Image (cartoon, rainbow, N blue to C red; front, top):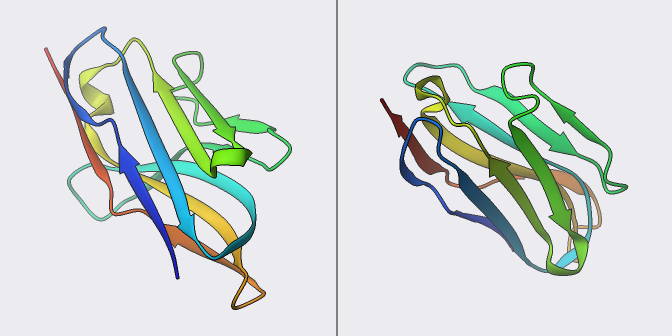
Length: 121
């Protein structure tokens, strides 16, 4: 039993900042890649940023230079610091983690339920 819980979303004016957190809990053996994805109204869900267990990072061009992804392996938590927010950043943000459960012994992708980020202007 593994779950991811996001927090930190909310309403902010353009140019403002938010910090999202996503904590994994349960019978975790190890966590490989973690990432943040977002979904605006519609079927698409796009990658925002990813970070490996070794803390290598990758960002979508649309957020590069504004967002920073980080992780605390001791806390099984991934963060997304969002600065200089724009209205087009408005979306539901989901965290994802590739986790090996102590019970299952294999890696599987887990998703949080999402947190709403709304940027007004």
